Length: 336
Image (cartoon, rainbow, N blue to C red; front, side, top):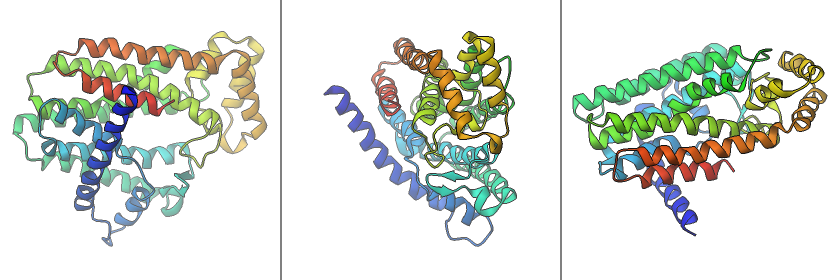
């Protein structure tokens, strides 16, 4: 009952804050301008999104005693950055559908999709620069935002170049997702804490980054499992990550323990171009994963990482640790 109540409270806060984020988003990026940018951007934005990342920023700020309105522009910057990554990621992954709608690069062309993403990044920085907070905190938020952007792109570079890799390991996978997902996940909590408490909280910031580096891999592994088994965000196509040759946790783990024949088959399929990968290939990879217990091991490994997050939360030097437990519980519940 307590977990359900907590989840309901977080969900209610997300709805409330989501409305504020959407209203401010329309001010920062007007939806009806005739400038070759508004139409493709809003085609993407209108496909949906729960505004969870910015809401977590505002929830953290409020629960730590701050004014969430002062964190609103930073929260929106996180949401805009998230959508910039999605526009570019769809091109890099050659995904043609997102939330049952054609992706921007499919509808408007690659050049317009890249340019729209670049514009989103500029507007994200603009959001932080115009926020009405003391200049020292604004500078800290810019540092946090830029670090998140930098590390996420580093992780994406590893991801792109790991596809079909023959010497991939679980440790290489974890380093990739710590960069690509960990900073990204923690950014809102760190920013919310800075707005609420100022710059003299380095110990708190370090622990929240550490929290993200555990939560990021945990939730990425769970996400990999969802894409593999039920489909997600790509028109519901099961196994789309296999067709993309993505180096997932399951791929890394199986390469470490499989026999030579299975390794050869796995690498051969994962090295194919997307258009060359058949449904039979996808099923063959699934069979290899099942044979070596990769799916079950991934579930257990992710659950263990989630348990470790609570140890980190206990070490955060703040009197209000409950907000971080609630966020971790909520995110874990979403990924089950």
